[in-house]
Length: 184
Image 1 (tube, rainbow, N blue to C red):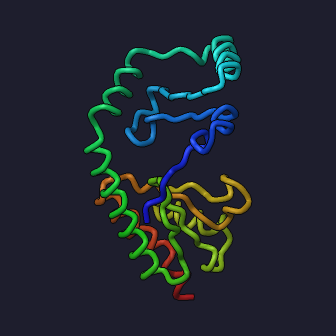
Image 2 (image 1 turned 90 degrees about the horizontal axis):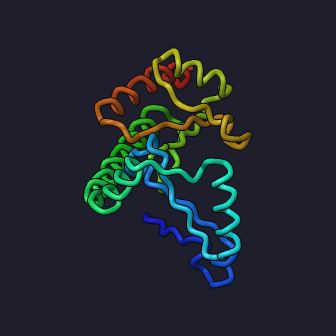
Image 3 (image 1 turned 180 degrees about the horizontal axis):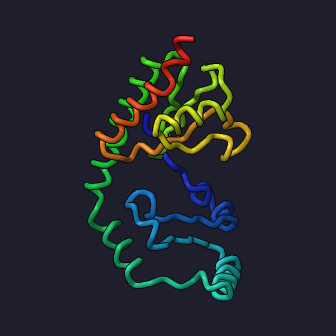
């Protein structure tokens, strides 16, 4: 299911006057190292205050390489991005089907505009630390859920915007590391 993003400022003129919208090509086009973002502020007073603050803090500088890379991404890379989205969706499908089939009780949450999969390991009956240790010892590195807040305890977050061969290896290692818990 495709979810449509609706910017807060597009809902009404009143909302537009009270909102600041920030976007960036960093995740979609792997340009994080170039430190480029867009800041859209319709309200002139808010925009002037933001500009003054950004100038004082030095956060208003943009190097030419960032500008050129972002412009190229936005103007010439739509096809590449569409292919990437299809590839990541297939990676997700593979991860979900393999983990949920081979590790009963494990649940991979649906993706929502991201390439980061959230995997729920709580039903395996071990603490988050125990699961994370088993995965780490099995040569799988993911982000421990609780580092994102108490409600994510027992989850791991995994980047799936990787070559399929590496994803298959990661899935194999996850299953190998956690299968003994299923057999207990």
